[in-house]
Length: 518
Image (tube, rainbow, N blue to C red; front, side):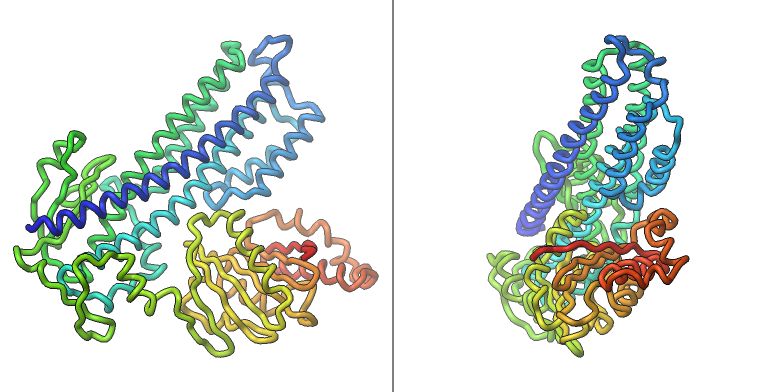
């Protein structure tokens, strides 16, 4: 094979590694923050447990006093408020039960607080990692498609945008390794191993009578070991899903053969050295056996295999099948800005009663980042005489939707992935102010939104699908439900608030509101 293809795909593999490096830095930074918080939690409890510098298991086994129970409950409520995600719902319930207990040991309380930090760390990083893998898969498909199309004239402008959220989510949800484990399984296993080790270390510290510095040193050591595992996991999973993207591209472009291309330097493994230059049929593509990654931290890639001379073709086809030519030195960025624009994000799509368009993408879809983005948009639209909305999908795409004076065409839009998305919109003056309309509730449930906001002249309203204790949530409005006459005594705004809470509870949702002051 010509060096042309080897060079192109070695460059692509290098770019994947750079993407992985950025993801690693982001996740490890969160580890550093968690280590600081955990050390602070341990220090607080150690100071309470130690009596005249006498650290013992007996002291640690003492029950929380009234003041400590109250402080522990506050800590629990703060953790639950921050949210911990689907993977930690079981622990949230466990934490709620623990905070409600009258008898709880100081050692148990300390372990639970440490676990809360670990659960939040792994859940946030896990969600961020899932989004990263989805973006990487799509990125690699597009770049691989582009490089092949530019070099051969196959497919450019016709098949490239067949990828959709459902397909990407399906791909990253399926395990690639022979052990059948998904990346989330590996994250969960690492979390459980770390928790078990930390809890053992804490108990043994009291048995031995260790000083605070000794325990913190051991905790930091264990956390750093887990922190280093992040790099190995990110690099390996990145290589795997980049490989999956390439096989999808080969399939779409009917590539019959591919070549193994190793990065040959002093760090290249014997496995990859031995496979470098091997040519396989497309039907034989199997990650770990005939396609990378072949091992942890593998840097080997694949490239389409053509007989000499085929790569000299520079013909391309547009979306209508017409042939055109692109310069051999054209970059992916240049091509995308010139051709992808008409197929992708900058096009405004008209629908009955409105229009919508894709603005861009937010890489970090954690709650605080999404909330900040929605708030900025709300400041721009809350005085509009027509309804407007911003949607942030589960994968981070940012859409804006324009409606008319009293509605949004959400039910007409089929291409935006609303499942687990977040949305905000305005209520023009005089229209269903002080709460969500019946249509808002229907839109939320029918489209399986995760989070909805609405802004009027005075309030921001929130509706979300978080799991919560229904009985606890209804305590505030219980009297009004039992005694409707009491409801009539409230002013209009307060009555609307109570009714909104009741309507939300019937649909297993949670409603909140607060003044914005804009």
